[in-house]
Image 1 (cartoon, one colour):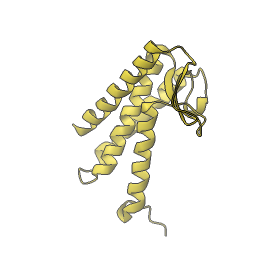
Image 2 (cartoon, helix red, strand yellow):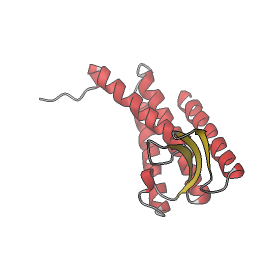
Image 3 (cartoon, one colour):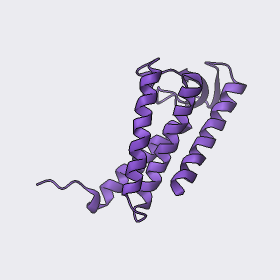
Length: 151
């Protein structure tokens, strides 16, 4: 149930933010939030991260579906004792589905978070995926039981 609640929260916040950006802004319009650091810039990304594989929508949808299935599989493998891992996977699921909705609905992903120190523009779904990965990395690093044993 926590998987569904967390993923649904990410999807709702992501889709609402993208709707507001697409409704209230013109493509490529940029609004300074913190001058020379953070902008809201409306970008339509027809590819994956960093704009790679542009206009490969069917391939990206297929890859996302496989990733979604893997996330669900691994979520089920880890017991309730692994709360952080399960939370991280739920964030990643919500992020993957948030971007999948865009690709299926309009053929591109709406991006709008623009840090001038980090060239790619991204969105809240991307943020959930990255935060989930960070939590996974920290959890695996800190928990000796989760480390791969090398002989």
